[in-house]
Amino acid sequence: MTPRESKKKRTARAREIYDILLSEYPDAKCALDHASPYELAVATILSAQCTDVRVNMVTPELFRRYPDPESLAAALPEQLEEVIRSTGFFRIKTRNLIGMADALIEEHGGELPRNMKELSALPGIGRKTANVILGNAFGIDEGVVVDTHVKRLSRRMRFTAEKTPVKIEKDLMVLFPQRVWTMLAHLLIFHGRQVCNARRPRCNRCAVSHLCPSSVV
Image (cartoon, rainbow, N blue to C red; front, side, top):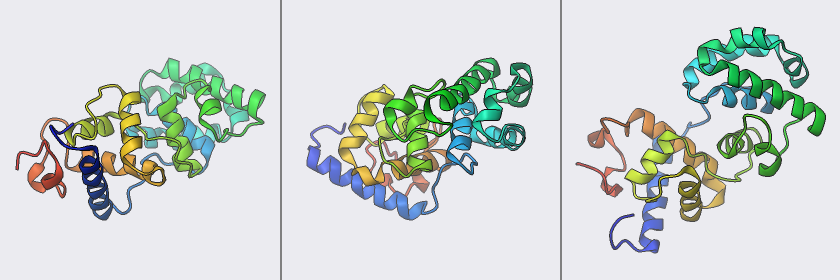
């Protein structure tokens, strides 16, 4: 965190950054194409170590073949593997997808649960994925999605000095009101992709550079 910056000033700075980013990216949203909570869960599992663009190329055929948990649970692993092969780690993802579908049918009547405890207990779904589903499929702000972009920007903007996603999430949840947790992640992800990238952050094009301790402008 910024040296000698009080909690009150850090919170005010964070809120101002949020407001500016919201004006910059008013249409920020989940980049994974989906039409149901089930589809979002599948897409998010596939997105591990894979780009959203690639996932969106794979899911149309995947959802055509397996439109619901019942059909996915009955999938032949070798056939499912071929459909999702290009997303990487396809054998692990196949096991997780079929396991997730089985659990939905056996334990939840085929429906995605709407709470962190039950969601994160499903195969292939940890806290980050559960946050994605809760926030984007159900409109429930349970936590903040901390992916590589959110992690990088949160540290650059001195919202946190932590290094692990769980601890970073806790710091963000203190700084920002619960009602914006889902959108906060979208804004940081959009800004991270378009301006504040990993290797060459474009500080001269950044709308919040005057509020960012890491800015070189």
